[in-house]
Amino acid sequence: MIALTAAQIAEAVSGTLSPALDPQTVLVHVTPDSREVAAEGTLYVAKPGERADGHDFIDAALAAGAVAVLAERPTQAPDGAEHPSIVVEDAVLAMGALAREVVRRIREHSPTTVIGITGSAGKTTTKDLLAALLATQGPTVAPVGSYNGEVGVPLTVFRAELETRYLVVEMGADHVGNIAYLCDIVRPDVGVVLMVGTAHAGSFGGVANIAATKGELAEAVGPEGAVILNLDDDRVAAMASRAQAPVTWFTADEAGAARAAQDVAAGRAAGLVAARGLHADDHERAAFDLQIGADADAPRHPLTSGLTGLHHAHNVLAAAAAAHAAGMAPADVARVLDGLGPTSRFRMERTDRPDGVTIINDAYNANPESMRAALRTLATLGRSSGRRTWAVLGEMLELGDARVREHTLVGESVVRLNIAQLLVVGAGARPLYIGALNEGSWGDEAHFVEDAAQAEEFLAEHLAPGDLVLVKSSNGVGLAALGERLATAGASDPAPAPSACPKESRP
Image 1 (cartoon, one colour):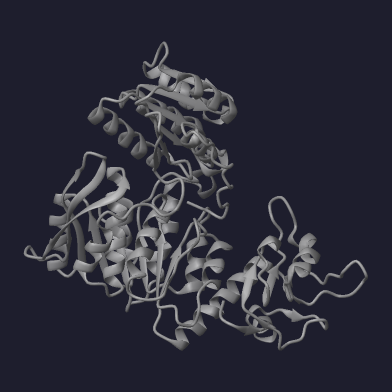
Image 2 (spheres, rainbow, N blue to C red):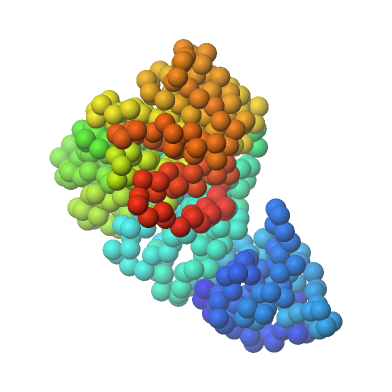
């Protein structure tokens, strides 16, 4: 983080300095995790959590080297000495206020472009692609993993320095108003909306509210910025009417490209980024000519994505559009994107085991739309190679009242796509298994187990050389760890146990 004194931070967060904290103490690192305290200059944020209260770890943080604490109440050491703290009403809101001040100071120091990305799926992949693009142009900061909520966005900002040229911010939400709050912190110059799905429909109160919330990003970008919208998603395309800034469409559809060109010619849109001649290569990766510009004679740049799954074409296009809006030349955009694969874990992560089994671990997150996209990729890979396909599927969380219906529909999709074998893991996903059975999956095609341990045991017995295995569920279900164990099962030397996935993620 940029260097700030305790007094400057207290002013930014409307906090009260304890007598034990010197106002001139310089702080350069912020963390809410006592295990991540840096050697010097650390401000430890004692925020209440789902399982533990950060105030209980203040002594551990100070012992590890933290020099100050951001807390919601005055606290003392076991000997009764007061902790060096900044006391606020709400630690999470204080993190947001501090991040807002950091962004303001960075902008004041040097030219900085802030790009916000939201959508029900694809945010992290698009963020990774965009960060790789912009890193070729100047100092770039982007989220670690999928840090995208009211804690994750400030933590991303705190990694920025005064010389940061590009700040990429992933924005997730589970309630109306979440995106507007995050936008108020970072004030994006460029806003990208990928798609609207049914993830967290329960907490939102329906898909219409999801669209309303994602559209808060389109509204937040000022007239001098750029709003980048997916023309192939009707709910996202409708956000153009909410934008103050000029709109650039991205589309993977030839008819969509023609409509977008008409919009640009009529002054209804400012730009177009299109995938011309989109098709899948032999490894089910998106290949196309990237065209940036609405003119019929705009140059076309051939590229093949390094990401498995044709659906990633939209993520590639969104990243290309954002990079171009930030000033990157089309030819340079295409050059960097050509062959660029995943950098975050458990996103269509492919491992070809020595024993001939292929594991595709896509279990970082899941919703009905991403489930179907991954299953279509699996089915296509199976058809093109003649290999037996396995779908190992767990629960999609936070679907509210639509939970049973959506799982049932995914089960039906498995059968309709002719996936050879289905293994459903966990009671929460059982309607998916029932949906497959009712659709006509009989005999030895569909299976159900209670947990990941049983799934691992079952697969160890039934997988054969040549099998293609997709592992997918919501992050909280924990199948990413199963996928990693399966990926290393064919190796002669077992890999170490996988680390847990980052938790700060919202759809």
